[in-house]
Length: 68
Length: 405
Image (cartoon, rainbow over all chains, first blue to last red):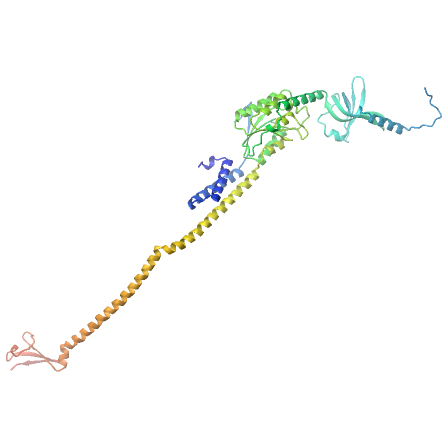
């Protein structure tokens, strides 16, 4: 599993979807289910945080090159 | 030639003859639809919003008027001395008896040629398939990197950035500023598009924007170089050039045509942050529901198992054993009591037998015990004592000292 902070929003959300799907559709041991749930919660919080703090990143080219 | 009779009564009034002439003008096919070229003079813009001017050339002049409703659509800043082409019809203004040009469109001289060029190029590129609807690419739902080619100043870039910030602030925007009007603009627009790809090869989407202006102002977006670059661009392009009514060739070549720069930014973000937030909440809720369902099921299972476990539990065995032990204990206790009783009885029997042997009892029955004084030995035979020997005689209530004779 990738570190949370390295995930893009889409990756995190897709994983959250997958976690919910697995919990819904697959028989898992209680321990596995709990681990999935915890991962899901972390993902959900991470997604919320990304959305809440989202700020459009704007860069501009100067003379054809990125103005870093 | 017929002589006018001085005494005939007039069969026209000024009004009726003017009306007649007006109808004559207005029923003429040619005069109903004219393009007239000339220079503006005596331009007047009263508060009514209508525009009055004289259109003239070296040989003649005519009055012209444009009503407010047509002025509203005018993309041209009229000035005296300006060479223009005016479209409209010619009729008579009854009040002054003057014929005049009622204008509904005005364009700079030469624009007609420009328009012909536009049509020619449009037909050419269309035939090449540059505007093919089947070749349009879908706009990504969640573009991560959005390129914008537009003027660095002006309302267009501001509108687009505001809209993107509001709808999808997760995106990254790279602006390639360029001039967007004038003869030098087309190659600069193309260069900006190329530079954008060079610094951001992972670009998801390109927005081409330019606020409204006269058709001349928008002309760079009809330039063949720009149109071809848009059609060949490796990522989807949304054009937001001009206003609702302006269609440039770039609009046709783009994958999506938006009416304005703001609309282009809206169409660039099919999914908004509000929708993402809703989806996230939905799955978070589902996650919790699912987990509690799993836990509930686990608890039910657990209850079931504890019950079943109860039946086979070693605890029960232990309890059973404990009971057995209790029983044994009881029996043991009972046994012991019995045994003790027997012992006690035996003891009691022994006791009474012993009691019966108690010498005191014998004395009580009148017997006496005689012992020698010298060594305390019991005298049980006559030989045990010598004459004149001191003896003790124990009777039931005391002792008597005596001497044999």
